[in-house]
Image (cartoon, rainbow, N blue to C red; front, side, top):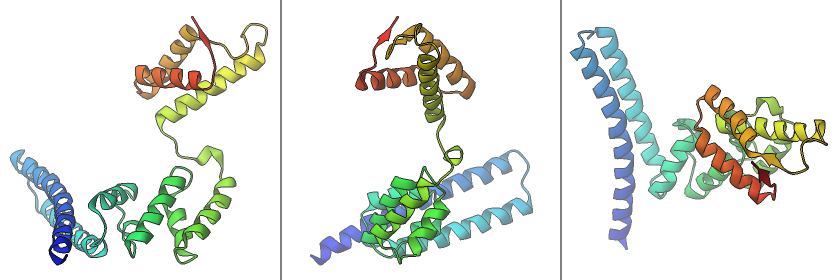
Length: 217
């Protein structure tokens, strides 16, 4: 039993070491590039070692905080928190898992700072935090919600379709979409924002079928 625990801890620590090595490689490569290009300077070296020391201290604190957590959970939390040390270092595995669920539920609706502050107020009680954040999200300004380029395009396309159905009820058949026109408009929006039109077109076509909205050529 003791050997199994020691093996598990070793695997978890190795996971953190790999993350740490990845960051070190990035910085070492950067400084070697500057030396090669002939722009080696004292100010850059000081900045490099300062970042190295900060990163080292953060990784040590993370190792101490997450000794008993599976390494895939640690990796997911580190990614969700966007490498924010304050958000990532929770007290135990259960608390961390619950906080991760809160981030997944409200991360795209409000800022991480709001979520973290709300989480701390009821002393990290999961249900109380979820209830409070649901109340906050219900009053959030829709225009301030963070969305990806793909989500922005899909929202605009849906509004465009519904508006045409309302504005031209005798021309646009109810619950029927012209595929050629739809792809042309979608392509223009994707080109403007640098999004792959083919992937998004396939996704939206599947969504229309799932909602029983027919298309026509």
